[in-house]
Length: 120
Image (cartoon, rainbow, N blue to C red; front, top):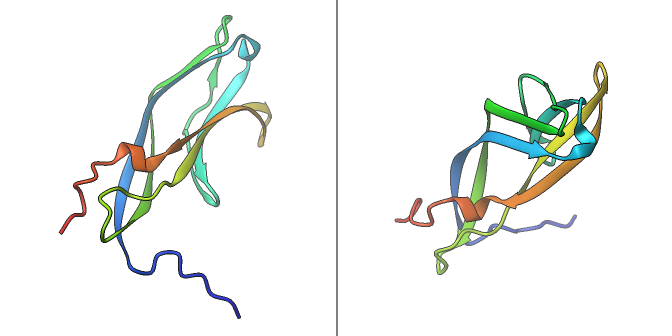
């Protein structure tokens, strides 16, 4: 049996993240019903409502807030947290319960935390 000890000797800090006011524009999205989600593996946060893109392909979830928690790690000798990628996706709703990807963006959570947090 093989074990992975990825976080041995490292400190961890749990953070709560908010993804707010997502705004997208792509002409190919014009008039399409869109959903928004944020994910990493099996962890997902999704918008509570879908929006229809306008004639220019612009869609906005201005009043929507996606929330999720994530634990970031760092070694005792390093002040910066290790990277952890999350993905924000916009999906086209093709019919009830079925979507297809319209686009996505990955971002590293470690770039959005105060590295002084979790210090001893």
